[in-house]
Image (tube, rainbow over the protein chains, first blue to last red):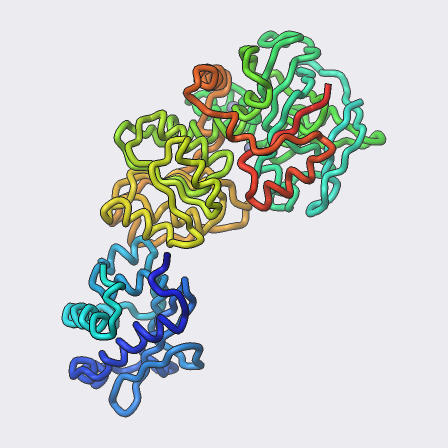
Length: 142
Length: 368
Ligand SMILES: [Zn+2]
Ligand SMILES: [Zn+2]
């Protein structure tokens, strides 16, 4: 059984969690230090399968803004994975290099932008666990 | 004359026709078919995925009785029970000489021409040639094949079971034994539980694999894989196959992964679910224009062996009798693989069942 049963559940869990991440000082610093290449108006897009869902990270007033669902935004970096793999990733249970090698995560765009963020993810992983507990979804914890 | 199922146009049903069958020439054998399996490769031709000259008599997984031999034929005689060998290796090309009859250049050429070695066929309809698939043309009451394309076998195995040896069993068991050479205690994943997939599973069990993970989308077939030796099953409709295999192997991946479907995506899956330094064997046959996408960084960093297996890298004159002995000894289960038996006239129903994934193997039984 997939972790998430519907597109809406992906947005309710991962989408809302990303919104929490957007409130952190780290993410604001990150936005301030990152420049989008010409022709792009969003940083990252996560394309999920099983269930199908799409979450895009863009900038608005110096802050990260989370867009759930279909969008016209042109993201510089696209991560494609099953929602199960996405969930595992944010739990910190997935080695990105291994996941890329096994095509569990497929990337389009400058991976180097994502790699810059990797060290900061170590602080975010526990936050996802805490968030799941907070919203009463400890059933999603391994 | 013989009743045969003929493909006249791609994408259309086969039609049953009375075709002329000429006498065997030098080095050729006339076989009265008793049973023939419906294989995905035949279906690929019907779909137009394997381009061949038309009209053609399909069928390559067959067994029957030698009726007449041409001049100079020494390895079989009238009355012998035989299994058709759709890789009739020449014995003299460079591949045959290095002990790889599965890669025979001459046999590969015949795969594309739909003829016998002399460039013609013995089937005709209203005076025009009808081609024969993989030199076999097994969906016909009678066929004429080169001597190398018939393997004499013991007589106590029913023809329906013997027919399976000629493609799905050799391909599946051979991929494990010859291509991968799976040692006891290995972990194995098999993507696709069809006629070949089931034989990979029982080949892996025969080889002493400790963990055999069967992957398919049909729950009934997955349940059945357990009686063939599968220790775990994954329904790829519900779960991501690669993630599921990693979960079942402590995140390591399997020592050996086999793909028995023939789709680029599942081939990549099979590659991705093998452990670092492991081996992936592609057995499924894709259309000749398709490409598989795998991660470039993984090639050096994961150092896997990615290879393929054609007819299980088998040497039919040696392997078919061995496989039949295993079958007679109850070490290979073939009967449960036969999901349905059809008459030649019902062949299109058989292909419909094959296409929908509902049959493991459908068999044509020829009337007396
Ligand atoms: Zn076949
Ligand atoms: Zn040869």
